Length: 257
Length: 311
Ligand SMILES: Nc1ncnc2c1ncn2[C@@H]1O[C@H](COP(=O)(O)OP(=O)(O)OP(=O)(O)O)[C@@H](O)[C@H]1O
Ligand SMILES: [Mg+2]
Image 1 (cartoon, each protein chain N blue to C red):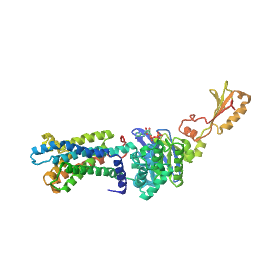
Image 2: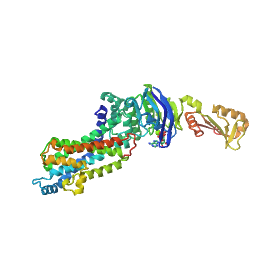
Image 3: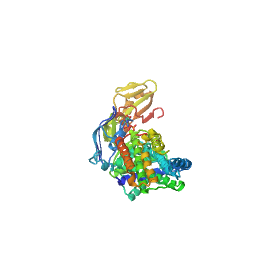
Image 4: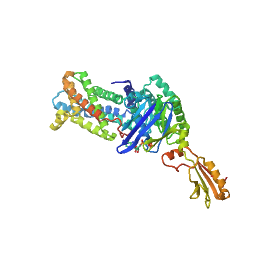
């Protein structure tokens, strides 16, 4: 899987991300900023729903982290479309790197970035808003690692399906926000209207936040969150399969730099 | 090194290549010529493995290029027609990336980056972001990235577009050197004099096929039609074997040596050549040959005009 050439592609991919870090920084700064605004209302909401000494961070920190992580979906698309705009896509393909090398190499740095972004947001949540976990930190890490993999696969699917960068970004952002909102990132899924709760099951965000809630409030360990993990793995397989099935390396894509 | 057989390619129902055969040997430079839209870039894309042909085969170093892809890709260096560089990376990072992608180890890659930057006159720009280069410098970087790993088969699709006189000479030097080291080079350009400077063999892609594939002198000798015309002020005299074309007298059949033909005509005309205003001569050249092959004769520029009145 990790051939030497995919690591070479990944090294340059990381440089390209760092050369233009604004989008990644936004996904870190915004949740922290929103957290400061929204903490009191989240606290009131949690206490009303029966969690006596809630600080508000129990739902707010994972909710905002997941919400803004969805911005990463359009970054995945950008990875590919920019290569077309720069004229480097064909050069990559003409090199001795295989399509798999290119895919793995391009996705790996972004995956690491998005995971780091979640780690920073959760850490900031602990330091600034008093976010605490009653269950297993390992379980939390596994859930987040799988969630980010689902996001990256979703982005890769959009990049494979759409012909222009604008289409992929719009669908990525709108779809991402809808999934996050339905999944309970804005308000706990249990407070949503009945139809929305039913639809929420189709959102990876729902299963992610469901698992995190158990880990945060109900002392859950890895063994207690196998159902959401299995569903997330299902999303990962589904999105990856569509991406691979629809991807044509020789397609002309329209990207802007 | 490169053997292309019976290559056919259509985009939808627009048939571009109708059975192209082309061989390029090690150490050989082949200038691939053809009008805009002839299919040069399409042909190169297929040979470099970027597109699938509808029919036909590409063999590189004796191996089927489509079946032995990773192996043959390592032998190839491609500079596409459209600029392809990473603007936010430095010149060094751009070069290093493609050196490493081609499988060079870190220290060999570093040496190659330095020597290639030197050859393309980019040494003092190595640590600048590519987006800060001028258009011609970007073009040079773009071409340098294709040859950084000293490939055995090089495709350069209009590498000198936008390069100034000195850069162009530099790029031609590198191409000659690659060939001298045994690389097979496919070189497209619309500047025909570059091929004369490279001593390239000529392949003309016309109407979906390679119309001519021969060494440069042979192409000129076979197709480089010469032309001559005697221009008169006032009445144009009659002369056997010549016809009147407006104010000019032109031979009825093509001539091999336009200067000798003009001299003979003037001698035959004698005193009747008094109204002569000028002599136009087109020497056989790659340009006149190319235009004859692609069916656009007569567009060739008059290379010499001797004004009789001034002489
Ligand atoms: N991706 C494509 N889809 C549809 N038609 C294409 C595509 N690429 C090229 N063509 C068509 O194929 C023909 C050959 O194009 P190609 O770019 O190979 O020509 P060329 O000889 O390189 O021309 P130029 O000298 O202008 O670079 C053109 O008529 C062009 O319109
Ligand atoms: Mg072309």
